[in-house]
Amino acid sequence: MTSAAVPALLSDVVHSAGRFLATAARLDEERLRAPSALAGWSRAHVLAHVARGADAYVRLLDGAESGGSGTRADATALAEAMASAVALPADELLADLRTSLDRFVVRARTLPEPAWEALVTALAGWRHPAWFTLHRCRRELETHHADLDAGYGSADWPASYVTWALDDTLRSLAARGFALRTVEATDLGRTWRISPHGPSPAAPGHELLAWLGGRAPAPGAHPVPLPKPPGWPLPPVPGW
Image 1 (cartoon, rainbow, N blue to C red):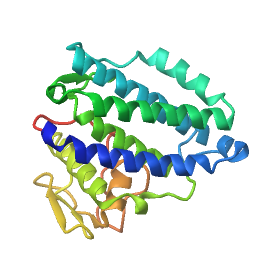
Image 2 (cartoon, one colour; image 1 turned 180 degrees about the horizontal axis):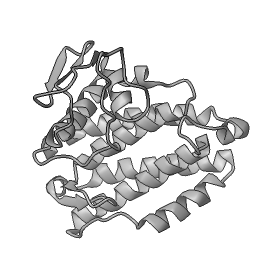
Image 3 (cartoon, rainbow, N blue to C red; image 1 turned 90 degrees about the horizontal axis):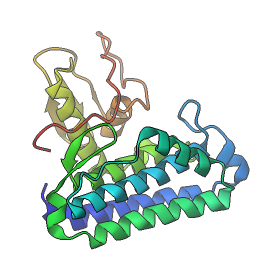
Image 4 (cartoon, rainbow, N blue to C red; image 1 turned 45 degrees about the horizontal axis):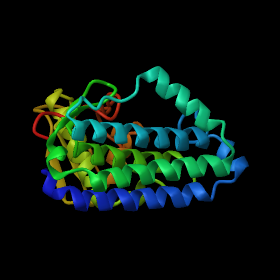
């Protein structure tokens, strides 16, 4: 991808954000404090995490324009900011989330085109072009929308998102010699060759992605157990 594809990708982010916010707006105080699909996290934790993630992406874009590293806040500061957001009443947390996502979209729309090619650094130390931040934001929105466990699941993920996320994830797994021979997304007409050995799972793309992302059991029945995927998301491999 190059910076020329930014407008279309940003449009996808805006649509993902709109769906996420619509679901969040239906959560009253009781439902907000109920458990999400993530162990140990309420739905409020999920909303707060997405809000602070959007703030972090703004800092990365600021760094891309200024020529700095664009590093995220340190883990301690991020955890403290998230804890403060979790404690907000439902209406204030929703407003905080909406403001953070709007700020990211506005920042992306005003970033000069050359800055999209600048390298920025994620909290985990990954280096990637600024435009990859849009992919990361969309992945956060779609994944955590399903994590809310509020009527939106992996089957609701757009096919374009599932295709990109499988491409990105399987490319990283192949670079690490993950023990799968091939992976077939039966509904997308796509097959990925991963390694010379191992089983070859075939299932709808969203089921494969949910499994690889640690959100669902391995799809289907296999004579040989499928290997346990590593922590997700993985750093992108060179070439993006």
